[in-house]
Image (tube, rainbow, N blue to C red; front, top):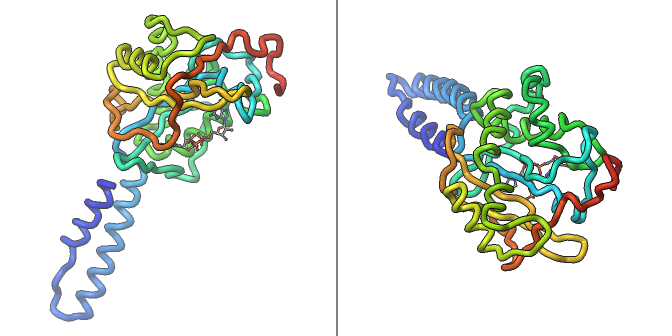
Length: 258
Ligand code: 5GP
Ligand code: 5GP
């Protein structure tokens, strides 16, 4: 958004005034095209206002309409896991797929793979090792940041450590396996992280609203949590929500389709 604004100003400033009408037309068109190309290259990589750092609760991903499959590495621990680090604009819109040619190169993140299996497991079916999920997140969101592949995943892993939601909720007496008020969950996270989260729910097989994803905001240089400039729209919960247990769920199945 900011970039578009600067582009417009620059284009206006570079209208030139040569002697003849023909020269003016040719020069200004050429310069405008040149500046547009340069700016589109610059703008495509880091034109956004903040990040959503989104963590998912695995029990709620699994006990929902789409069900789940455990990763090939086995059933994940009962903990929040990363869904993604998503660049966003202050007006609620977001950029996506900024460099369609850029694919995830596993060799760039080989030192992170162990921790990614633990903190960023894939729960979609069919059962997989995570590379496809991480590749999707990189392509859709990571390519719109100014981070390289290693930094993008490293930063997300670091933010998960800085917002240990399970521990934060546990400190407030909120543990999996019960219903809690939406307000108490939000307040506990706000007290623990210092900023208001956005809590997204989905619906379990019995029709209950359950805690599904927690959104925290991070500044555009990916250095600290910030107050969210805008919350996602239309994914609200009821006033009382379930925080379902994952350790009780399908514990005898390792990674076959459920
Ligand atoms: P859903 O429609 O399931 O809420 O979202 C589908 C996908 O769209 C998300 O997984 C994410 O990739 C993207 N998405 C949804 N909402 C937002 C948002 O508010 N900001 C950003 N940056 N991406 C979003
Ligand atoms: P998004 O909604 O972020 O655009 O897309 C998520 C994509 O990654 C979907 O195609 C989804 O099937 C796949 N995916 C693989 N594993 C997971 C997972 O554990 N959680 C979510 N939300 N999506 C996953």
